[in-house]
Length: 154
Image (cartoon, rainbow, N blue to C red):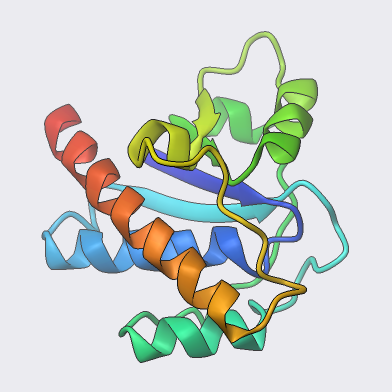
């Protein structure tokens, strides 16, 4: 199974989701069975590591984002991933516009599908440190539910 998380610049929300899910998969003994990546709909940060504030908040909870580098989502991703999860409605619209008719990936909002509380993971980029903590809270809860689905698919 292959999962791709998508936000705008691929430096805050989607790399956090990638790091959290990778960690949870390792703990569950499923790291070799599920491939996880993240990307942005924009290209401003391609090649850059996640935002330092994202890395710091994640590190406090035991997640290492330091080896990740931002990349931009491509049309080919729709053929190579099983599940593409957008962090917000704006990115979901961008993904739907990019999605080829032959793509096999399921496309959905991450929180709507796995948390059921909110539709969107808020962008913490212009907020203080508390925004990054809130993002982690939401992502951890949704990744727990995603892990349950992954186990059910295997």
